[in-house]
Image 1 (tube, rainbow, N blue to C red):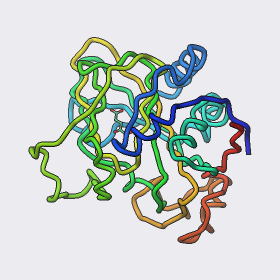
Image 2 (tube, rainbow, N blue to C red):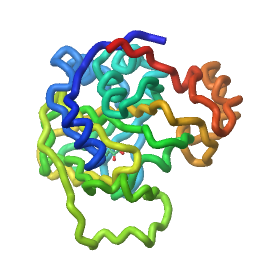
Image 3 (cartoon, protein in one colour):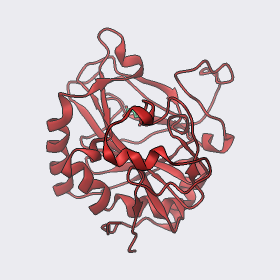
Image 4 (tube, protein in one colour):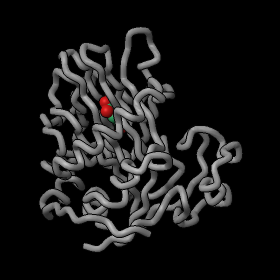
Length: 265
Ligand SMILES: O=C(O)CCC(=O)C(=O)O
């Protein structure tokens, strides 16, 4: 286990997270982290892939995941930045596990929307206390592809897997949608069941973000096909993944690929 840096959020922000399923935190990390992670992201960009709608011709959302397993700066963001402390506070959790990281890059003037979905269907876990931290590395506006959330939709307790048909989800239904303009170093924290999408980058500036995913006290392993790491774990020949191969439904996640984080706040 590694010690983490400190970051604090107010009890009102925790209440907002519980009610709305998402909060915006200003200046979650400082300029050193922003510069360090911009450099780290650029270094990893050439090996990355397109996602979801992005496979269509002319559509550009560049995405990669599992960076912390191969890049020291992404690893440092997980174990040494204020992010884990924020996750534990928002989840009101004594225990915290890291699930994995990733990045999303929207190139200028790209058709780069990401369709409505929530995150739970992408993880082999069960339990309530799960969140994603979406860390902005650039200013974020409607024009360059901000995220938008259906307020309180985590309380519906329904999965929206955008790889499947979801006849229950009608985009046209009136719902309260919330969003924020952001500065580099700000983050959004959303619950794994909060429904969100992101709009196209129609501007002339890039929009880069790093995501980290976290789970708390009540979360255990649950085998689900087509979830992270997206290929059958038996086929992965990286020593760290051996610990995942023996996980059984209902067991604590603690293992090399879902490390337990030591919290010191
Ligand atoms: O960064 C984006 O545009 C989309 C991110 C997203 O939908 C997610 O991380 O679940």
